[in-house]
Length: 192
Image (cartoon, rainbow, N blue to C red):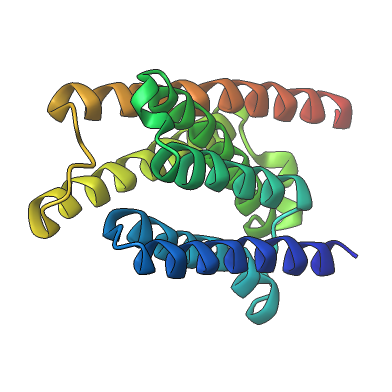
């Protein structure tokens, strides 16, 4: 059921963005068309993971990711909500939290089950926080690269924008990392 729902929701988002890409292309709005094409690619990630790999994230993460895409790509870039000022920081805070949850899910799938009792809560905290921050850094590298090589203005505020985004990513990831460390410590104490 979860796999079918992931396929359905991701497919609907991809179709929605494809329609927008064609619409904005026909309207001569290349920026919005390009964002919609990016939406197709981003929306296809859970779809491709569900179809071609055994690595599947749980439904709440996938739904959160798709809601984030709507907030960042459709509302933020296409509808212009990034012009509100606070929307960009809010989206980075949310993305840091989602990346941290994705890090936890990845960690739980990759760690050997017999090692679970020997893992330090500090390691879980650091892995979760590092995963979220790395995602934020990679996004800022993407924005910088687009600005430098494609003449875009994704880093509208320059260094201040980049640092504000990284701080928001870190704070979102930090909240979830603290929670994951505490959760791991509680699990370890119950086993003893």
